[in-house]
Length: 132
Image 1 (cartoon, rainbow, N blue to C red):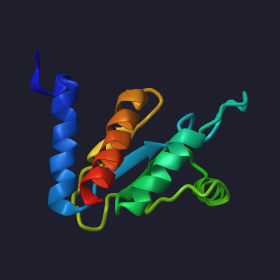
Image 2: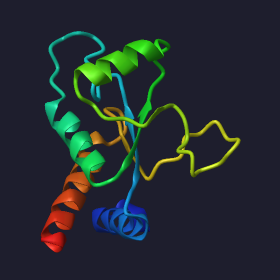
Image 3: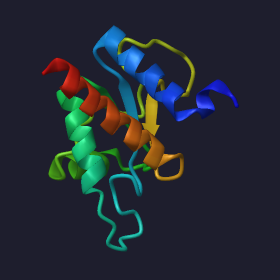
Image 4: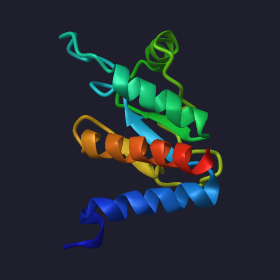
């Protein structure tokens, strides 16, 4: 099996990166990851709480969205207390001319949200247990 198809390897990679930089760059999709795009009553409190906890441990958070109304995204995130450092932009410490946003991990309802969420929850739990 390919190395990064094993859950334990992807978690270890994240953990090592965090230990080196005391941070991770976490991108998160807006629609249907933190915002109910179709207005069908979806709840995103667990993902929002995760983002709040990631901010507490020093992660750099990027809203990764195709939504054109950036002001709406900012207002919604502020209203829901969703922390973010940028919208569709690389962190200031990562210089690139590529249109691809740099991140260590992506939270996205269409791209393995459960696995990414679990890895980040495990990271937070592991850091709490090793720092206490």
